[in-house]
Image (cartoon, one colour):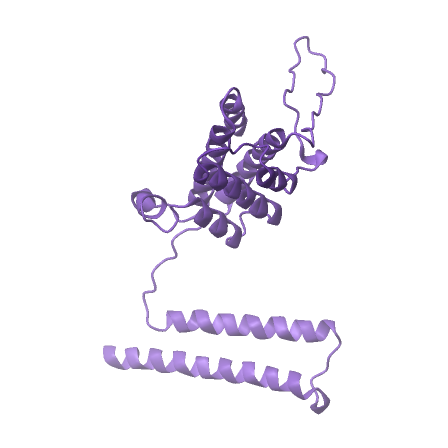
Length: 251
């Protein structure tokens, strides 16, 4: 995993002295790359297929697709999801309008006003290290000027790079793995049976928490429990029949 602080400093260097168009496009490209790393950390590892899904006409080749999948997998917060989409929209506007566009363009200014970072989430630009063994004074928080849309945009991108680095670390700890193959015909049915039993147990616990007693007066609850038990009984019968079929085949 790349060092998030190096990435943030790299973006800041890219921002210095470049046009508004270049700043918006480069910032979005950095976020796109980080999102790909985030998804790669979480999904089943298969480097050979990465090109198929992340490049060309692959399902995750676009910035939008990466944002949406990251959110639906629970890897992005609501704020991150909405804010990255706004960065994408700003990038698209700069990329598609040929002339006369900058961060002072009204539509761009309006988008930037909608993605302001709370001051509590702003990290210091510089954290001095101790040179003499003594604890240095607290670093200074410098908030972007509310009247400077480019500064707001840069602050947002830097904050996103910081939070996405943390999301990537979390994703690595919760990464998906390939499940083992089933080896017997009854095993998928047993997994479904376990799901039914767990669902019934959760439902009965919920009724218990609300002091609901299964009686004729609670006809719907009684009907639901009866339906679950009937499905469990049927699934158990199916499993038994599958096992019996294979046992007779082996005799």
